[in-house]
Amino acid sequence: MKLMLALSKLYPTLSYAEKEGLLSELESTYSRLPGTTCDQCATCCTVPPPGYLIEFLNMFKYIRDNLADSQPEIMEKVVRYFFLELVDINVKCPFLDQSNNCLVYPVRPLSCRMFGLLSEKDSHLGSRRQLDTVAEKYRQKYSIELPREVVEFELQYCDQVRPANGGKKKVAIDLIQDMATNIENLEAKIMPQQVIDEHYTFVPMATHLALSVLPEGARLRRPKVMKEYMEQGSSEVLSNYTEKYKGFKF
Ligand code: SF4
Ligand code: SF4
Image (tube, rainbow, N blue to C red):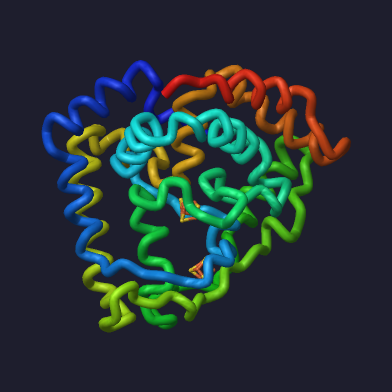
């Protein structure tokens, strides 16, 4: 995975985004969606959906300013997620707490917010996770056979999402597309379009965070850790990383 925003650039970029009002614009874009409630089963957090870089900055700031006590737990889970998301289906979104609450709910990305709000027809769910290409790469390059339950995981449509204060449940796909365009325009103000086009900047929030915090040496050891974990059910290298990076200061 390519590094998108090194820590040395993250803080100045965050300051710039705040100064230019980009995070306020992001919040105002989010407010176009109705608040919702659901059964909180956390199935949709099994495989966290992707988010934009500007959404990651917003979340980083929130964790820094509001979740000091939870930061070690978050970082430990983020590091585990980075190394194990492809080999252990039980590794859920790192921002989920033990009571199935989202620790970053006020700043969760658009893709989390819209889940269950579109009609089933517009949701494009039920398709495979499209990991076949990734699985083939790991097979050829690292002799790692990714578990079928990970490669073939399917997120089903959820009809348990309810509006928090009544009103119409389903949201038009046009609104979501318009919101996504707004967010892309905000992102283009913090990152050159060429970089956005060349790098894959639309990844889960936990991946954004891991890519920014973990140094290149650690990121390159991902296949080794995956292999070790699959063979032994644990990894000493991973334990060392989780221990080290749970002390990360936001
Ligand atoms: S949106 Fe649906 S799948 Fe996700 S936590 Fe709520 S009830 Fe579960
Ligand atoms: S950010 Fe929150 S809502 Fe989204 S997948 Fe993670 S825990 Fe679930």
